[in-house]
Image 1 (cartoon, rainbow, N blue to C red):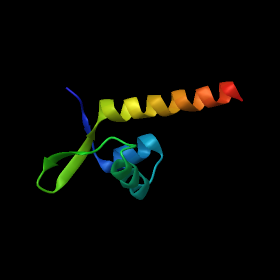
Image 2 (image 1 turned 90 degrees about the vertical axis):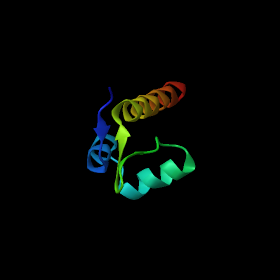
Image 3 (image 1 turned 60 degrees about the vertical axis):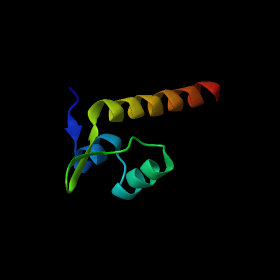
Image 4 (image 1 turned 180 degrees about the horizontal axis):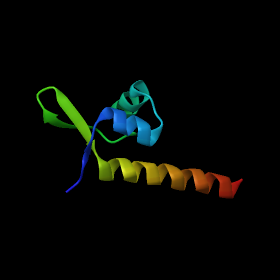
Length: 66
């Protein structure tokens, strides 16, 4: 079972601000949070890890082509 990460953890892992995270969620470029309570949400750790891995792969591919 995935761990559910709260926003401060996601910000630390990704190095992104709250506004950047939510803007990318809205644009479909970042995993959407899941509701974990009436006023709480979080992100699945596996989805954040996959997003990070994709970003690293894209970054490395960009440098290899240069």
